[in-house]
Image (cartoon, rainbow, N blue to C red; front, top):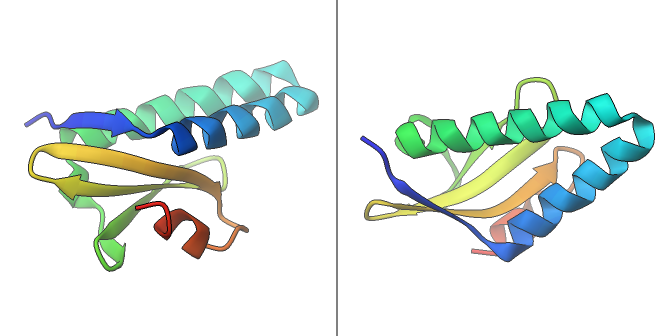
Length: 98
């Protein structure tokens, strides 16, 4: 069952900021990072309830090859992506955006 997914501007900013940093490290990393984020978002659309609640109603999907978490909530059949944060960052900064 597909859910409708909404990526908030703050999460888009997180993705852009990370992609820009990876670009300074090498363009192939940027492509790999964006591909992995895209795959994570597709997973959320297909089955967002697969991932556990970590902070009240906020769930986190961790990427496989990059140290990032996708912070999201589910409301009815809508999935809201609030943040995409490096795992070294304080998770509260992602949960405060909900």
